[in-house]
Length: 249
Image (cartoon, rainbow, N blue to C red; front, side, top):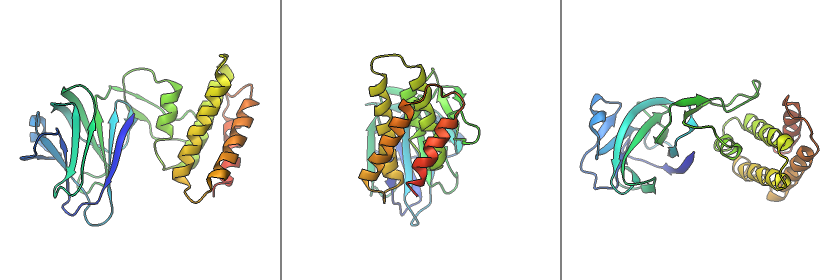
C-alpha cells in the first residue's frame, strides 16, 4: 500500500534515501556496492531542473512497474525512512515500522534520469493482477504476501491517476462484485463508502469538475450498483463507468 508520497524539485540530479541518521555519504544505484548499504544511504540519479521528481513510499503490495534498481536490507534505527535531495532543499521522513532492518526495494522509471522513485518496504514475493477485465488492464501488483481485502484492492486501483477510464471501470466492477455477494447488514453502508472513495479520486483526476457534479455522479453510481443482482460479467461496470466518464470530460 502507498503510505507516503512527495514531489521534489531538484537542482542536483541525485535524490538520497535511507535512515534518519546524518548523511555522511551515499551509494548511487544501481551499483554492486549497494548491497553494503546497511545503516547508510542510497541515491538515485534523477532528472534535474526540468520538473518535479515523484517519490512514493509503499509497504508490501505496489504496482509492478519500473526497473528494480535495488533490492536488499536497509537499517532504520528509529523505524523512519529519510528522503532528501543532494542540496537539502527538500527533506522528508516517514515512520515506516519498528526500528531495525527492513527489506527495501527501489523501482525507477528510468535508472539514468528518473522522474519516479518507488521505495517499497517489506515487499512480499507474490504477484497478482489488479484488473479482472481484460479490456481495461491496469499494472499488476508486486510484493503481495497474503490475500488482499476488497478495501485494499480498491485503494490500490485508485492510487494512480494514469488510465483513468480503466481505473474507474475496475473500481466500479470491484464494488459490484462485492455488493452482489455481501449479505451483511452493513452492505449498503459499505457500498456507499466505496463510492465516496471514487469521488475523492475523481477530485484529483478531474480538478476542473465541481464537487457538486462529482457527488451527483457518485449518487448515480451508488444507485445503479444498488440495483444490480449479478455482476459477474463486468458489463454493468462498463455501462455505469461510461456514463460517469462522459460527465467528467
